[in-house]
Amino acid sequence: MTNITLSINGGGTVTVPAGTTLLELSIKYAHVCARPILVAKVDNELQDLSRKLLYDATVEFLDLTDPNGYRTYQRSCTLLLVYAVKSVLGKKTRVIIDHSIDKNYFCEIPSIEITQELIAQIEAKMREAVAANHPVTKCTMQKEEAIRLAAEQGQDDKIRLLKYRHNLTVSFYKLDWLYNYLYGEVAPNTGCIDQFQLVKRTNGFMLQFPSVGLNYAFSDISKEMKVAEIFAESSRWARILKADTVGALNDKMCVMGSGEIIRVNEALHEKKVAALADQIMQAHHPIVLIAGPSSSGKTTFAARLAIQLRVNGAVPHIIGLDNYYLDRELCPKDADGNYDFETIDAIDTAQINKDLQALLAGERVQIPTFNFLTGKREYKGRYLKLSPSDVLIMEGIHGLNERVSAEVPASDKFKIFISAMTQINIDDHNRIPTTDTRLVRRIVRDFQYRGASAAATISMWPSVLRGEARYIYPHQEQADAFFNSALVYEMCVLKQYAEPLLFGLSSNEPQYTEARRLIKFLSSFLGMPSENIPRNSILREFIGGSCFSH
Image (cartoon, rainbow, N blue to C red; front, side, top):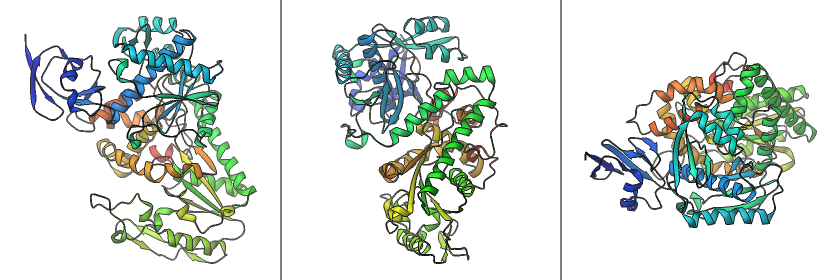
């Protein structure tokens, strides 16, 4: 028998017979991970543990502490949930993984009243399956056979999605009697998916996962969050468009083309912006503060809000909080000794409050500009004085932090949180994370406007997410209003810009694994031309051609 040589988790090498599975190897090398091994990278490609190793390779085992391992855990737990729901309510019962809040999944069972007793039954069935340690096997079959199995189990969403697959074969995961199509790798058995809980919510329930930030304990989700309202609105929008899954979106494009999808989605955005402007004017708020994570479309949103305020008779003025950065040598540093530009302490909040108080008092204030080349704040003679009809719009990542406007009376300010909260999912059981939407946007924008490679954007993305978790999301519930900047059709457009950049990464680059994951994600969408996208669309902030300056 032929032997092969493997390097395990960056350590020494081992010689094993060709055909050894990753699962067999993971049992021997369980000690290389702090928690149960869920998935592996083989030469930088994510692989199920069922994969047989036939050639010399570098193997990295991953557990819950790795982002790819965490996604595998969530995906595996989703499979377990679907199995339990169908076991309790019938094999053709539809269960929807609707959206995510703080990495926990909000789920619905259409046409079924969600009671505490039903949730207890479903969770008990899940735990019974965990105790039984059922194997989860990957079954590759012809596409026609996969569609037949999906029909037998009432998975119409899978049928619509599979219709657009280029490959003639499909891989389903089998848990006991359940076959399900899941968009990525799954754990090898139910025994290692033992940390979860179900929590009742209005019209549904949360599937809760262990929290990385709480040492893998569960976070407190006892309160309904304001952000849940915007996800509910997003679901309504998707249903108005009749495009709540990628398969449904592709169907609409094939029947009516892209024009109506774009026009209706953009009209929904404009209607929401106009409603926010009306709300600001009716309450006479002279200060509007806008915040949101990276690639949310804050700049375009601020410009569109300004136009709607003009329609209401106001005179808007837009200022970026970045103009109030401290001079670089005064900026705090992180644990590695690098300047930390993400922290609120890098912003001169005292000066912002002083200027805002002066403006509200009717005084004339000189507004600074930050020179990113010299690292200095500069005053170039830009003065501002607010008249009774003026509205000052300030946008930046710290806009909702009370330190920015602590000296401004609550009645004088209106806070808006903006993010790209994905409106559609791949199918009922495969959701599209909001972070993926923003990452694809950022990859395209960084290349278009900054000449940055996809590898560079992907490599700095974890740092961006850490900054958002620390400085933005803790303040989102202070918002007076939310704006969802996601567009149901945007991945159909962005894929044509992003795919060439992602395919350009070679397998020896650390960012290759993430690039391959995004390529697979984008492959489900039919392409859409950009010509019909309005010049004031938020999407133009990323692909170019905007009527606003960025």
